[in-house]
Structure formats: C-alpha cells, structure tokens
Length: 604
Image (cartoon, rainbow, N blue to C red; front, side):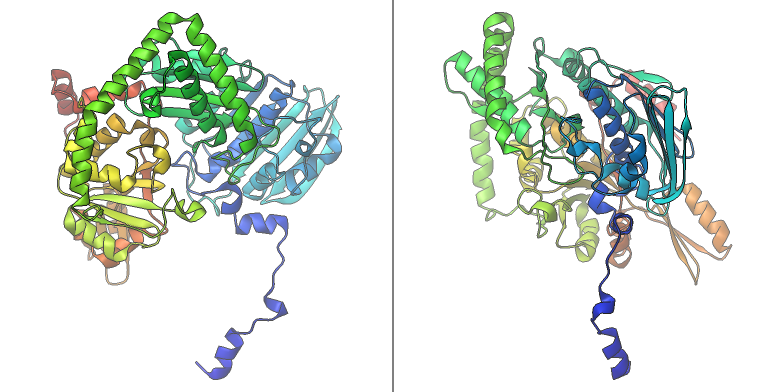
C-alpha cells in the first residue's frame, strides 16, 4: 500500500462524524433497546421483547382502570396483532407516539401512575425494527391510523368509526434484523400467564385461548408447586404489594419477582427485601435467631410491587434498582408473616418443622463441607481442570453479562475449545467422564463427590445463585449416546440441588454440527441429516462428507466459529416446578417397565 493510501485511510476530520436520527440509531444499535436479537428460539430473544413492549402498553391501560380485555394473534408468517379496549391513543398524537423517541403519556403521573414503559422508547423500537408496522386508535366514535415500513411513515388515515375505543397495533419483525425468526407458542403462553397472574380480572385472548387469573400470585404459586407444598400458601395482596410463598421438599430457594407487571428475572431490591422480611417475621415468631439458609431452603416465593418511577439496570428490565422501597417492603412482609403465623398455628408448626429439618441437614453436612474445603485448599484454591475467563457475572457488571462456562467431556474437546475461545468471556471446565446420577440423593452428595463439588465451586453457587459467576452454563457434550447421557446427568444434578439455576434460564446446550460437507470450493456444516442431504445435493457427487462423532474430532480452527458470534445455544427450560419430580423419577430413577417400553417404542 502506498504512503498516500495509508494517510487517506487514517484521516479523521469533520466528515467522519455522524449524527444518527432516532430511527437510524435504533436500527444500527438494536441491542441497546431490546437486548439480544436471536431468532425466537430463546424466551429473551428480541421478537418477544417487541411483543412485550406492545402488550405492556395495553396492560398499562388495564392498570389505570380502562379496558379488561386484550386480543393477541400471531400468524404463521409472523404477523402480530394486539388489540386492547382501553382509552386509545389521543388521535392527534398517534403518529408521534409510535415514531418519536421520548414521546408518550407515561411521563405524566396523572395518566399513568404505575407503568413499566416509562422511557418513551418501547413502541418506537417495535416500529423501527419491523418490516411492517401499523397503528389504529379509536376514541369517541372517530379513528386515526398510520402505517410504516421499517420505521418510515407511509400513510395516515382518519375518519368516523363504530368500533369500541382502544388501540390496535400490527407488526412483522424485520427479517434483516431477526434472520429466520419464528415465534414459539410456548414462550408466548408463558408470558401471557404472567400477565394474567399479575393482573387479576384482566382477560387475554391468544389465538382464541383465554388467559385469566382470579387469585393473582396465589394462582401462580399453586401452579408452580401444586402437591409439592408442605403447607397452604401464605398469600398477601394490597393495592401496591402482593406476595406469596410456601416451602416444598426441594433443595435451595426459588423466587419469581415482578415490578409493574414486568418479570425481573435477576431479582433486585424488591426480591431481596421480600426474603429479608420473611426471615424477620419467622425469627420474631419463633423467638430466636435463625440461620437465613435454614429459613429459605426449600422455599418458593413470588412478589409483585407497583413503583411509580422504577429504575432498571437496562432497557430489558431484568433487575430492579430502587433502594428507597426496601425498608417499607421488609416491614410489610415481616408484619404480615408474623400475624399469619399467629393466626394459623398449623401452618406455623409445619413451617418451623421444615426449618428444623433444614437446620439438622445443615449440621450434618458441615463436617462434610469442612473435609471438602480442606481438600480444596490442597489444590491451592484453584478448581482443577477449569480454564477461567477474565470477566464474571457476579463481579464485572455489564461485561460479565456476556460470560459463559462450557462443561465439556474429556480433554480432547476441552483442548479444542481452550485454544479458540474468547478468553475474556468464555471459561472451560473439563469433566472426567460421566458424573454421578444424583437423583434421590442427599445434599451431602455434592461435597462427597469431587467432580460435582468442583462444578459447584467453579460456578460459585454453594451459598446463593446471586454469586453465579457466569451468565450461561453451557453443556458441551458429544452428540452420541454417551454424550446425551452425560448431558442428562448434569441437568439432573442442577435440578436436584440448584433448581433455580435452571428455572432462571442460565443452563444451555451447545449445538455443534453433526456433518461437514465440502468440495474444493466450499465447506458446509450441517446440524441434521436433512441439512447434510441438501448440502450434498448442492455441492455435487464429488463432495466429501464427514460425520463428527465427538467434539474432539473438530479441529480448533473449525471449532472457533461454533462458539463465536454464530454460536447455537438451546436453552434448558422447565415450565413448572411440579414437572421436575415426575421427569426425574421417570428418566433418572429406577429402571421401570414403563421406561423400558418408552425406550423400545422410540428405538430407531
């Protein structure tokens, strides 16, 4: 390259400074507004955030006492229609409200007191990130409608209408932003049930199916635990605060926290205050100090608060940061728990019995813990076979939110990953073969088994999930029978002792190609036999087809692309806690005739 060319490439002057419009900024940096993009295979993918932003506005109308019904349809082509029966957007501001950043009624406390969408961005982002978007508002016998393409206004219409008041929004996510997207019915239904539980009296209709709850969070908790609860759910409901909890036979603690109808997956001030209030109420009733772990082990709880000016850590609103609400929540929860236990002695006896059982269990494993920790000290406080990354979820804020750890079988697969991973965000833990089947075992098993103990220490979840060091725990096993067995054993371990890790959607399965099809000009990696056959037909008879039997057979040069920007991760999800015991018993319990029959019917 000539000196003049180099000089030209390095010029930094006024011409290099760009000013983007709001629309351009959203489309250029969509992650700042909706978090992850994705294709719809994960419940937090962008297309569900678009849907949420629109439904949130309709729910806000219900919260303000206007409209008790929301209709939602999603077509096979991905077209979403949301119709509410609230007040409707003021007709003179319809276009601005869906296209101009920082425009909306939610900056006015007289109109929207407890809204999630307080920053005037949500619907505008939906508009900007949709290939087609239209809005229609009906008020007092008149309507105003506008349509857009990728955020650009196409036309406006207005006139008389005999339809009931409300707002209808129709959009199609832009495939240039969300390639090959597809809405998963399961994720949509889960969101709609949350809306129903949090808004008693609201009816949501999805493709004709009705979602409604009469008892709010009490219904949610009963649906989650069902027969697993040890006593009747303790439930409190006030205009601004609702909570419910009970104990089950499970290990660990599980919480579902919401603010203004928004599920805060990572908790926040309201959740920590809820836990503290329960602890104080129980200890005051018992008249003695208690270990917090003894009180909370086996607990399943849910809390919903209404806050005028909620402060979230990001636009995706996964964690609440309003510290000023903490004292009031702690006091209200403590007072209610204390009064409830005095009024319901049968519940109090069972709750205290569970705490005493937890206390005995904790003391039983203290000696085992000490032995395990002493053994760990001999390894110079390092977890063997862990190649760590630089940034972590529990210590490095936004940087740590990209962190992940691969739990992989054997040294060969680990070697390929270690040599091509991103050392800032990707850690690798190498397993020594098949882990122990933990189903039906006691918690001391974790400390007696070296492999499981080191997994727990690597993740740092011994005391609390809040200490989790990685945003994603990725199971990276071979796509053969042994690999699938190891994957199931790891999932059983987490569901048995660290259930909340799975319920909070931190566990994933790494998808790697099964085949490589190539000729002299092109290489195609295929994740199924159908993809293999299609690639072979396109590349011709002379192509070479390789079947990858294990991760270790993929060279580091090739492996890098499978754990890079285009990584394929399949989330491990559980819809309700009540499914867990049945699933584990059937698949990981004693070999029964029913399981044998199930396997024989599905043999290829």
